[in-house]
Amino acid sequence: MIAGAAAAPVFRPAAPEDAAAAVPLIHSSGPAAFDYVFAVPGRSDAQAFLRRAFVDGAGEFGWRNHVVGVLDGEVVAVGAGYGGDSKWPFTLAAARQILGHYGWRHAGGAIARGLRVEAVIPPPSGDMHYLAHLAVAPAWRGQGFGSALVGHLLALAPAGCPAVLDVAAGNPLAQRLYERLGFVVTGERASSLVNAQGRVPDHRRMRRPAAG
Image (cartoon, rainbow, N blue to C red; front, side, top):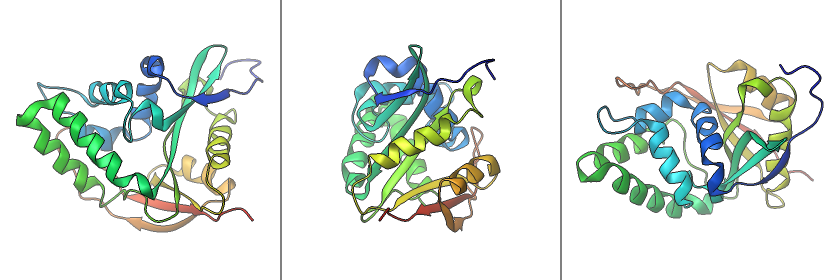
């Protein structure tokens, strides 16, 4: 914790030049799952792919899909919020980015692993406003920045849309934070996905009813 810190971050849409700070934070929001899908020994680690996709701008991992929290000119938080209508545009963007990054030899494996992860962490559907890639820089955790980030993303949700997120079953601190913000666990999906690069943990889906 940084002594005397009292200021709150200012949230704004992400930009391509945020990649150096934002990509490690995005990766930290689910490192095992990202490594399971995107780490290919001898070819690329997960953060290298995420960096390419973030700078590209399109899709789930692009800068256009994210907000960042900035304090004293430093990116200290990142997150995304999007709806069920994003599924196919995001799928097509991811396929293009994966093929461009890994080439034909390795792209198919990464795409297949990503589809398997969707059985544990399903993409949004219907009218839900899905929150993802929620992360705060380690030096600033425990100071309310996570609550502020979620609050900002909730404020961006379309009227009448419930908010939904997934949390690793082994992350009770994050789950308690979301519970304090009105989310409740609605189900849990077991995972058997594992390779030499990572093991995807069991995940719990949490839901917060639409305001009003």
